[in-house]
Length: 189
Image (cartoon, rainbow, N blue to C red; front, side, top):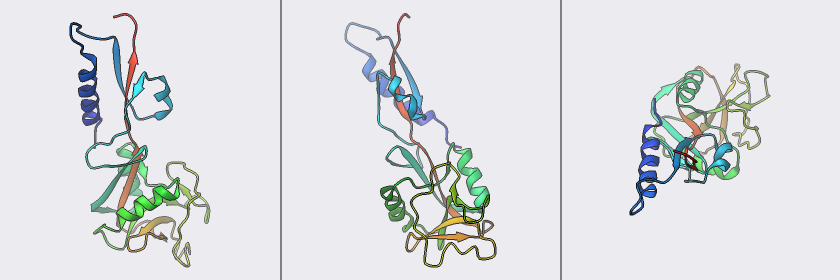
């Protein structure tokens, strides 16, 4: 499991470099590591998002492409949740294009798991992270629910989507929010 230690170490290093001034020992600053960007407005200033090792940054999100270990869809989602994320979802065409460019370099077979599923209501596709299911790129003839396929894969050669048997073992992409260093002014000691 990835921890926040590398990100916190980076924030602490930057904080130390900015909190020392000639002739003064310390400024009244505090430091926090935020993965929930709704609270960044409370910061004196916040550094751009960054990711732990093994993750790639795009926008405010970090992506981990798991190409060495294949899992069924449920186990892949559980692994992503364990990493404080979910299987990848798409919120924009640009984000989708970013992932298509990277997935085409994958050595894991014909497709990789994404966070889409219609296991609650057949044909009612949704993302595991709760994002709206707006940007679609189905392969021709899909989704077809062939023998009860309820989980979404992205085809490596084209970037198009396929509904797939959730028990198949595939590589997968985890997505989680990037973290920001938050510097706050504190009064008193």
